[in-house]
Length: 162
Image (cartoon, rainbow, N blue to C red; front, top):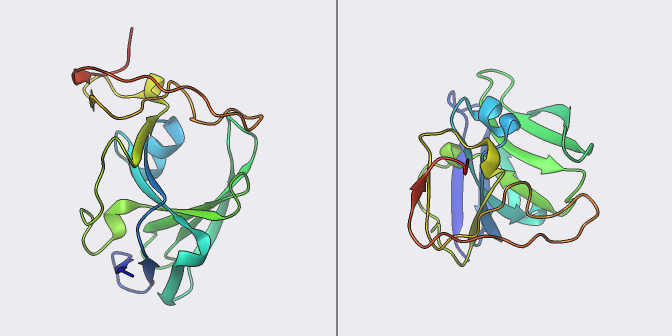
């Protein structure tokens, strides 16, 4: 089983993941834009039991989702404020890693078989949306738990649909 490590800017908090992500979510919602300071978040999702803190003790900020009304728990370094991973009231058994905190942030593949783009309605106009990867205007799962149908592009295009 593969082990991948990561941590915060100052090195106070370190973590490791075991195995491959369940999926990779690329999220374009305003929360993820604010949380990362970027156009979107690349978030490999793991089973909670496959993520462990190996050094330090992250602080936890609780945020209520505007969309689902459920809580998100953002785990960060208390010293340098790096956001490391997020756990969810809505998806209890999973943990999403802020991918840029991995020692090698490109170790996991992003393909049509394991990834999805969500909240593309909030994508920045200069964001290229890929062909062959499931795209969702909002979350891939409705608030009532039903999966939503994805859309697919035949060729990449820039920004959200008008």
